[in-house]
Each structure stands twice: as structure tokens, then as C-alpha cells.
Amino acid sequence: MGCGASNMDSVSSSQPALALPREASLEELLGDKLLRQGQEIETAKALDGKKAVALYFSAHWCPPCRGFTPTLAEAYSNTLKSKGLEIVFVSSDRDESSFKEYFASMPWLALDYSDSKRKGILSNKFSVSGIPSLVIVGPDGAIINKDGRAEIAEDLEGVHFPWYPKPVPDLKSGPGALNEIPTVVAFCESSTVEVQQSVLEAMKQLALQYIDKMPEGEETASVAFMIATEEGGIAAQLRKIMSLPAKPDGPRVMLIDIPDDGAYYCGPEGEVTAEGVATFVANYENKALIRSRLSKL
Image (cartoon, rainbow, N blue to C red; front, top):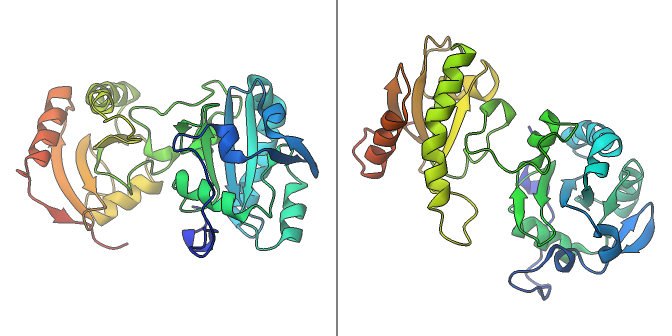
């Protein structure tokens, strides 16, 4: 879990907006200067030759941040920096002394603590609602992956750098877009690895179709797809609030629409096929399914 959005800094409506181009490059987003080990460095020089930049929204007062930072620092120093990743700390600390103390433990760059307007704009642009949050961005300012924290936690050596999003992410890595858009989840925690791979391939076909249909400028498809391969965690929580058996006995596909007042829809059980999932989603879009509502944990 992370720290809630109520503790995130934001741009005050009484402050003038920072004049950024509509499609700003990463350098324009970050400004002319960044900090490294307490010294100012030109942003262009700091990012020269980097293949991707991770914006690390974090704060010393946030326990999950303090837990993740040493892991990230070790991975950065050991492998990720040499692969072409740079990290920029975007602080949500409550005062400058806390910022300096926390930043002293980091081997990467930071946005100047005093640049609160830019910090707020970055949080808004990349839809950061809680911390720690790690957004992977390309040199052109385009988002590569909003859930860099989960990606790097599973890939400390950067085998999959720069971590382009998987069409069908696993719930064990985090909720993905579950809280934001309707999401089809294939629950197959007790299935064999072979069955899970078959389910993944069936889901992947449709997920890629929805990604291909995304309008230009949109960051997410109209429907997301996920798979649950391990018991416990988020999968167990979802089973509980949908009144599904806690002990799975085979694959089960569900569609969860949290933005629609916590709606969910029951899908096919047993063998999961691309055709079956496609029909299920089409019926959802045509409002031909029975709507249920998630219970509270």
C-alpha cells in the first residue's frame, strides 16, 4: 500500500500557472536545473543520453516510501543506471530540512524543493494520487509506465527495461488500472502454470485489440485486462467483496467496474478462451449483463 493523496502537494489556485507547452518535453517539464548531491546541474546535461527517466514521487514521512527507497537505490546503483535509467526525486516532504535529509540517502537527481508549482504540475500531469509513485517517462515526455514501482520491484536487474506496460498485468504486482477503468480479471490462482499461460494468451488477444483502438492522446484503453495467478493479496480481497469462494477451484472471469459505484459482472467459468472473453466484454458494453455491487471489506 502507499500513502494517500491527501498528503500530496498540489498547485494552489491562487498561484499563477507555470507556462508549459501543451506537449512538453521532459526537459521542459523538469525545468532548467535539477539537484544532485546538493549541487545544481543543468537538466539537459543530467539527462543527456538517458533512455528513460523515472519520476519518483516520495516523502520521508511516508513509511512505504522509506521502505522502497533503499531497494530502488541499490537497483539503480547496481544495474539500472548503467542501462540508461535516470531517476528524479519529486518531494512531498513537509519541510526543506526533511527533504534534504531524505535526499541525502538517494544517489540520483531531485527537483528543487522550492519549486512547488512545478512539483504540483508534475503530480497533476501524471495523475499521481498517492506515494510512493514511480512514473517511467521517455525523453520526449511521453509516459512509458505509470506503475514503475511494481515493475522495478519485480525486475531489479532491469531485464525488461524500460518496462513498457504488459497487455495483461498480474494482480500480484499491484492493482494496475483497476481503480480507474472497467477491468476484466481472470482468476486462476489454483490453476496449473500451463492453464494460467493459456488464460493469459486468451486475454492478451483482446487486450491488444483494445489498446490498438485507443484514441490518439488517450493513455488507457476503455477496458483493461488482468490475471490473478497467486492466492492472497488483492485477488483475495476482490474475491471477498464479490462473494466468490476464497479457495478457487478453477478459472473464473469477472468484470469489475469500480468507477461505476463499485459494479461487477460475473463471467465464464472453466476454460477461458479468447472468443468467450470477447463475448463477455461485448455483452457488458451492450448492457446485457446482470449488474452486482461490490460489498465493503
